[in-house]
Amino acid sequence: MSKPELLIVGGGPAGMSAAIEAASHGVRCCIVDEGRELGGQIYRDAHAIEREASPDLINPRGDELRKQLAALTNLIEVRSDSMIWGISDGNKVAVGKEASGTEFITPAAMIMATGAYEYIPPFPGWTLPGVMTPGSAQILAKNLNVMPGNRIVVAGTGPLLYVVASQLVQKGINVVAVLEATQRRDWLKVPFAGWQAWELLKEGFGYLRVLRRAGVPVYYGRIVTHAEGDAELSHIYHAPVDKNWFPDRDKEECLEVDTLCIGYGLQSRNYLAQLAGCKIEFDELGGGWVLQRDKRLRTSQPNIYAAGDGAGVAGSKIAELEGRLAGLDVAASLGHIDAEKLQQKNKPLQRELERFSSLKNTFARLTRIRPGLTELVDTDTIVCRCEEVRWKEAKEAIEHGGHDFRTLKVMTRLGMGMCQARFCWPPMARIVAQYKGCDISEVGPVRPRPPIRPVRLDVIAEAQSNQTQETE
Amino acid sequence: MVSIFIDGQKFDVPAGITLAGALYMLGKRIMRHTPRDQNPRSIFCGMGVCYDCVVVVDGQANIRACQTEVRPDMRVVTQRGEPKLEHSF
Image (cartoon, rainbow over all chains, first blue to last red; front, side):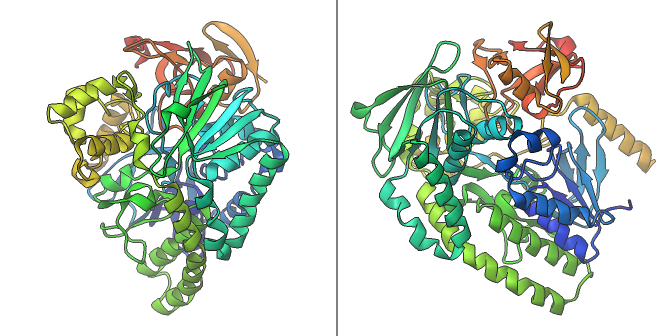
């Protein structure tokens, strides 16, 4: 296939919709995705083993999107099992496989559809085998038919908890309890605020019904304060919280479990966009540091768009709509459709987007991270999983003047490991801000540098030498 | 089914499963011990972001078990501490 005009980063609902929309107007697209099949995290059910594992739990929307995309294969190139580790000169994108074969792509436009990952604040015991994200348990149980444990607690906040807990129940796993940090009275506002997005509410009630029928108790206004175990998880402790999620330690209770699925909502993945020079801002209701965008979903960089959870956490329905809007705008900006057609196509999508915005905003307010979570760390709690930096070490560095990412990294190695600060820094930035009594914008985000994925040096060297040969 | 070797021992696991899924299925929740404190770690994020489930695969260290599909005769070694230099290339 000839050189793509549009590079789409990520093959979830936003990326697939962007490709479908753009290609339907004649734009040559390339989707780069880390997974082995398209679908992203939410529609991870295309592989044969995944289809057989839980046929009843497959979301038909993923299949529909994959089908629409397959009908446009002459215009859409799909690079699965691939990652992008760098971008330079505005649009020179390094696409490669885990161990070899980097290629450079220079598209005319890009859509960042990089999705989101879970937010987990550090707490004592959170590195024990058996403590994992709800998404992780979902992949094991639903997609691979592997039981993550025999006695599971699902904890944190947000809609994903109920999706995963109900699916674990349907796979016959003993879910001991669901612990939701936000108070029940706040959750009761959801149906009123989100009635326009009736199909999502219906879906949500479906999950709760599964839990109720199975007798799984859902406790609101409780958080996990710490976890214990010798080599693996054996016990968790949980306590009621006030409206700022500060736990009442006198009322702590213990549960014997082998698995804890814990996650406090999602946060955007935007390192690549940042590397391309796209500006970010802190948005409490968008899941942390998010990309700045205009109404047309353009970032601060020319010809780079962002759609879906990677641009600010908003869910799969909004991701799809944003993907289509961005794909449409690219088609217009590259001259495949005229302004009139753009306007005509754009309007119904905008209206549909409006329909989901109230529910999205309500969820965002309900599940926003409260300050009580940042005070779970104990002296010896690991705050950087990769480099095994403990709170006492980080605290000492903060007291010696380390209060931004770079300084703390140099002083303690925090954020220097393989995840490249994706897990430690978002909660740590809150902890530092709270500890110093300043605003999180003063603490700041990570400033990612290439390679934004761990890549072997010989892979980079080989890519560079191929590049030089080409230019010569 | 596919035969793989984990720390020298042979196991049959379903074709198409990820290495993390296979290890979990076999009850091997501990996938590595950390370099600094030799603490046990397992699958955490499950989607390739956290790099907590890294193992040595066919002589290559720091491979994410959650992102790697099993292949026939794959040789897997659970990492103990810092991976040896010969596993880095």
